[in-house]
Amino acid sequence: MRLKNGNEYIPQEEEKKQSLRYTMIAVVCVCLILIGTVFAIRSYPQWMARYGNNGIDLSNEHPQQTVPNDQNVVKQVPTVDSRDTGKTNDPDSNSQKNKSAFISPLNGTIVKDFAMDVPIYSKTLDEFTVHSGIDIEAPLDTQVCAAAEGTVTKVYTDDRLGITIQITHGDGVVTQYSNLSTSKMVEEGDVVKQGDVISGVGNTALFESLDAPHLHFEIQKNGEVQDPSSYIK
Image (cartoon, rainbow, N blue to C red; front, side, top):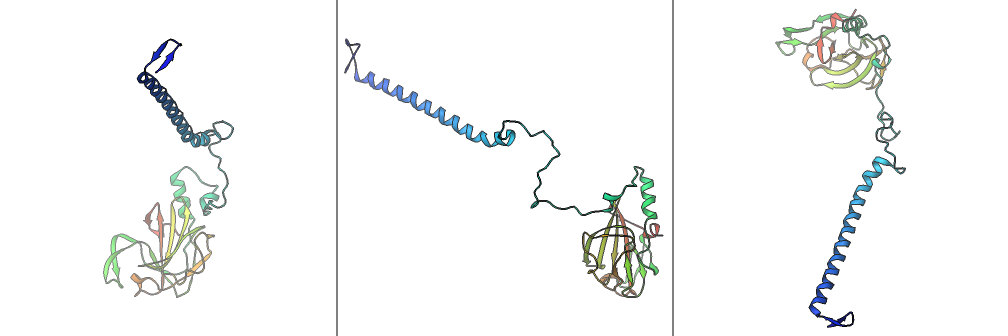
C-alpha cells in the first residue's frame, strides 16, 4: 500500500491496474507510430515517381518527350513510306500509282501464270494446284532485279520455293522473289532502288525442281497475293 495525498491508501491491486493501463496506452501509441512510419515508407516511391525531388507533378507535362537511352534504342528500318512525299488520301490513286511503278524483275518468258482460282498442272508435284505468282524462265544466274524501290525485309530459304527475298514497298505492297541462286547479295534492312540486282535465277525451289530454271515472282498487298502481271510494265 502507498499514501494518496498523504492521507489515503491505494491498494496494491488498484496500483497494478493503473500501471497496466499506462502500459497499454504506451503500446497503442507505439503501434500507431509504427503504422504511420510503414505507410510513409510504402508511399515514398510512388510519391517520388509522381512528384520528383521538387514536389512537382511531371506526369502530364510534355507527354511525347522521352529520355535518350542508346542501350535500349531499336533503330527503325527505313522504308519507302518514310520518304514518300507524293502520297494521296485517294485509295484508287495510290493503287494506280503502285501498279505503274513496278517493272519486270528480269528479262524472260512467263512460263507459268498466276492461278489462284483455276488450278494448273505441276510437273514436279504431278497434280493440279494453285499458283500464287508467275514463273519467268531464264538461264541460271540471270540477274534478278528489284521491281521497285523498297526495303529488304526478309532473306530466307523457303521449304517449298527455295531461296527467297522479300521487299516492302509501302502502301501494304510486298514483292517476293523465289527460286533464287544466292542470298548473299542483299541483307535484311537494305534499301534498294528499282533495278538494283538482288540475286540470280536458281533452281532451289523444291516444289518446282523439275521445271526449267526460272524466277518465281509474287506480289502481295495487305497480305493477299495479287496477279503480278497487273503490276509490272
